[in-house]
Each structure stands twice: as structure tokens, then as C-alpha cells.
Amino acid sequence: MTKVFKLLLALALVLPVISFGSPASQAASNQPTSNGPQGYASMNGGTTGGAGGRVEYASTGAQIQQLIDNRSRSNNPDEPLTIYVNGTITQGNSPQSLIDVKNHRGKAHEIKNISIIGVGTNGEFDGIGIRLSNAHNIIIQNVSIHHVREGEGTAIEVTDDSKNVWIDHNEFYSEFPGNGDSDYYDGLVDIKRNAEYITVSWNKFENHWKTMLVGHTDNASLAPDKITYHHNYFNNLNSRVPLIRYADVHMFNNYFKDINDTAINSRVGARVFVENNYFDNVGSGQADPTTGFIKGPVGWFYGSPSTGYWNLRGNVFVNTPNSHLSSTTNFTPPYSYQVQSATQAKSSVEQHSGVGVIN
Image (cartoon, rainbow, N blue to C red; front, side):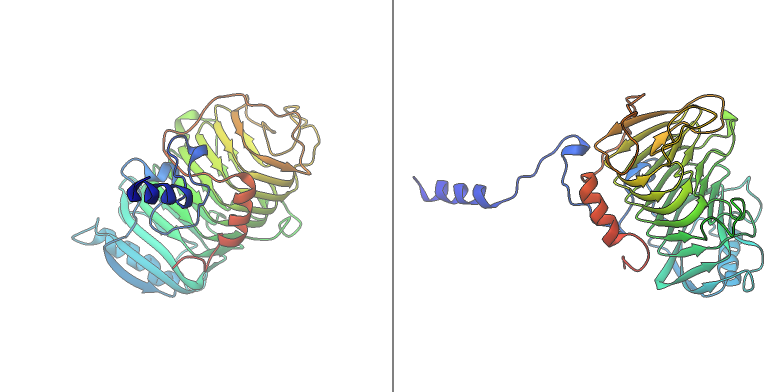
């Protein structure tokens, strides 16, 4: 046996095996990164926000809004802009009831290439949300947004043809069940009115009633599309995790815990790939009075004239009604990605989701 052959044999015994191919066969390790999104926000040219451009700091809502408005009025309205938030944004220090990421000429004109990023754990939006209107290539990262009732009543609203949005490593919450009133707060992240190419990753959604929706109406002409949710922590919620109409949605490696009523509500025309998620104590197990589906991790629940569809693969169900479930579509997304087992994902989400994790 030659020395070269012995060396190659020794290397083969100690080096890890690297496999290529389908998402399920890729590397199981999937730690958070600030380099860029996985999923639909990586398509259509990708999502980079304000990377490589001007950097500003803000500690009030008035400063954030002024930076956004001035950028759209400038001689270089597409210049990348990163706004680092170092303080608590409130109704009192903001010029209006929400932070409006839009072109100053109105939502018919696009605004693009902006990042809003919290500094450490100091980027807080207390009682005030963010709305993206015809906003393209936007990143919102490392902020907490909570107890939002004013404006649209939503922590983040992505609307009016917005595209390539990455919502990553944030924390969203209010009260459960909402000061005794299920309508006291609206959604945490609502995506609607033809918004598309969006990734929602490594966030915490907690203590809320109507968690979030994809599509706010059964009118197909206003449907959003192409949305990825991965490595999010959904905890102590009632329903709409999320509610989906018409859109193609990929949900992988999320951790659902203590969902009181229903989780993934796939309504009229929706297709959702539910892959390697961990469901713990999710759903009431009762029959929905409108659709007849068992209230649990996935189904068609209350409202809309017809069902959506779901493809189920590799999920773990603990104390969660699931024996009635089977796939009703073979839909899978058209991009490459890395996926963990459901159990590995649970551990990763517990360790790495929310604010103060990434630099």
C-alpha cells in the first residue's frame, strides 16, 4: 500500500460526508445568519435591504420617519439605507400612528433598498407598528414590536405590491387573549394586497390572539404570494398561525407550542408545504362548526367558500390532534434550502430565535 493511498484512506475515515441533492438530504445544521434570507426572499433578485449604502442611527419614531421620507425625496432615491434603531419608539415620539415605509409621493410609487435594524436589544417599538407600502428590497431585523393598537393595529403590515421583504430575528407580542377582547389587537405580521417574495425567519410570536394572515380577503385579485416561514417560535397563541388565502407558502423548521384553537389555516386556493415543524399542544381537537375540520395544526377553518391545500412532510406532533391529517397537494417550493429534522429545529429555535442573537 503506497503512502499516498494510506493518506487518502485516513482522510476518508475522519472527514465528514457532504451530500448534495434534495433539501431533506442537505446538512442538518442550520444556524441563523445575517448574510441573507433563505426561501422566497432569496428569489426575484434577492433581498439585501440597505447593505453597502448609507448608515444612520435613530432613537425616535420622528427620526426614523424623517430618514425614510428624506431618502425618497433625495436626488438618489434608490440609495441603500440602513437605519439602526437604538431606543424605544412610541406614539409619543413619532409624527403619526405608525412608521410608514413608503415613497413620499404615495403608495403608487415604490420605495426600495432599506434596512431597519435594532441595536443589541435596544430596538423597541412600543405600541407602534411598521407598514410597508409598495416597498421593495426591505429588511426588518432584531427589533421587538409589541402591544400595537393604533394605526393599522398590526406590528408589521406588508402591503400594496411590496416585494422582497425579509423579516428576521424579531419579537412580536401583546396580551393573551387581548385584554379580554379577541379584537383588542389585530395581527402581528400581516401580508396582503399582492405582496410577494417574502421570508419570515427566526422570530418569536407570543401571547397574541389573531396571530397573522396571508391575504385579507377572498378577492383573488388582491392575493399575496410566495412566502416562506422558517425557524420561528410560535408560543401561547390562539389562531391564524397563519391564516392563508390563495398564496403559495412554505413553512419549515418552525416550533409551535401551546396554540389554543388552530394553527395553519389554509383557506381558498392556498397551497402550503408544511415541512419538519415541531407541534407541541397545538389545537383544541374540536370540529370546526363551519368546515367540519378538526381544529389542530393544519386544516381549513371557519370562513372562505372553499378549502386550501397542504403537503405534509417530516413533522412531529406532541399532544396534538393529527391522526386525521393527510396531504392534499404535492406542492413544494422552487428554491434550494437547508432543512433540519423537526427535533433539531425545535432546539435551534429555542436557542437562536428573537432579538439579541445576531450581530
